[in-house]
Length: 246
Ligand SMILES: Nc1ncnc2c1ncn2[C@@H]1O[C@H](COP(=O)(O)OP(=O)(O)OP(=O)(O)O)[C@@H](O)[C@H]1O
Ligand SMILES: [Mg+2]
Image: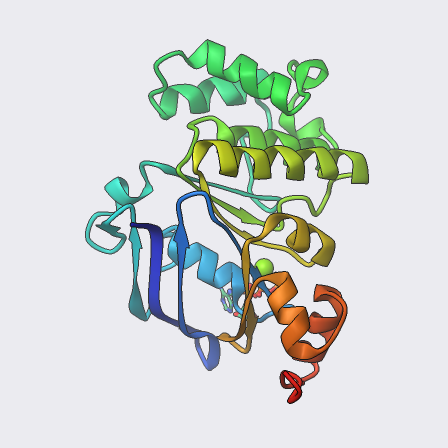
């Protein structure tokens, strides 16, 4: 069974059609990417998946639960990270993770917080206030919070945007490893095509609120007759069609 099934989602903001009939699935252990130019509708789609924005039409089903009818059941095994999220600014990093561990009702909250601190290298930051961290440090705390409940579906909106290359590389590695070992489903957006090539089993190109191309990075490069996903992106974003020779 798919962890996430998105069917014919639509959303407009006034005269702007942000999402225009988007459908896709994410299976257990699968990493799916949404790519596309600024304003394509990726974040709006993620927010509808998470029940943060109500679709005009279409449905979201998570772990067999319909988001519109049974939001809390649908979201019970999901989590989300994005660099634009805010955590309580005056709390210290350790306090924030303790609060979320209790909110999530974890059985061994202190042990799980310690694991996340270790995994995301937050030891030296534990006593610092969230608002005083650098943006990359804040991103690591947001990821730790998102991993705390060992989610079966992890939604990440540009997860490594603020991270230095070393931290980004390590975090991509651990996210992919956990998707494989724990069967976690992941839905991510990114403007870093190398990151997408490394992490995603399948990508959907979104343009003007619609999915205009789908496949693995290798399949898409083949279909467009180019070397890599970066070149596919430029072709798709500039209105190119797949190569007629394939
Ligand atoms: N709350 C809102 N009110 C009005 N318009 C919105 C709102 N949220 C998004 N939009 C519009 O919907 C469209 C899609 O925005 P969205 O944030 O989903 O794009 P995106 O693909 O995530 O882009 P980016 O790559 O820049 O993050 C844009 O035209 C945006 O201006
Ligand atoms: Mg966005």
